[in-house]
Picture 1 (cartoon, each protein chain N blue to C red):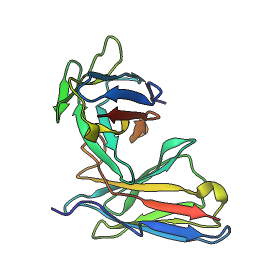
Picture 2: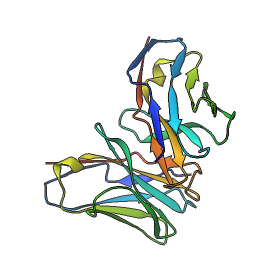
Picture 3: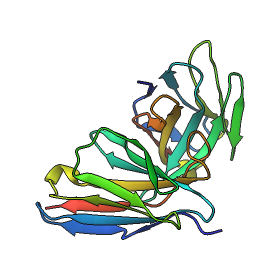
Picture 4: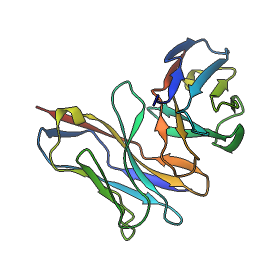
Length: 113
Length: 112
């Protein structure tokens, strides 16, 4: 069974640009969550999607958005990038979300210069 | 909201030493508890979990017991290997905000 796939693995963007990250969950999983990992703030929850609906959102500005498609694949978008958005962005998939087991992808390392 | 506190690292051990990484939590109710491990350049892997009080999660020689009385979920391993060197995260599922809440992570370094 293929794991959670995130693309791209690495990105370098300039301040003010926008970026889209992609996550393909494990087959059959309907819940996809996104987390931001930084040395200063640790792992912070961004949002969760279940069956194409955003069920929950963390405390991030509106520049951070996401969506989920009918095949459960998810994308997250960050507009008007700031230097502080440099981080490892992790996607996790699970069957139903909530406290069922979450499987993480390898992450996308975003560097904003 | 709920929170997780785990010991500062790095924890430096010699191969075959006993490992304990402390984790305590603050939560309303009795959340599910998890330990995740992150190897360099990788995402998180679920190491073990416990869903109710007194449950013991175990995997690959690692163990942790859900202690309601002390609100703790300490990670232990009897004999660590060099390959166990990684960052370990304690986490709980916050049922109110419906998200995983992570501790700050503890780096483990095991030398031969």
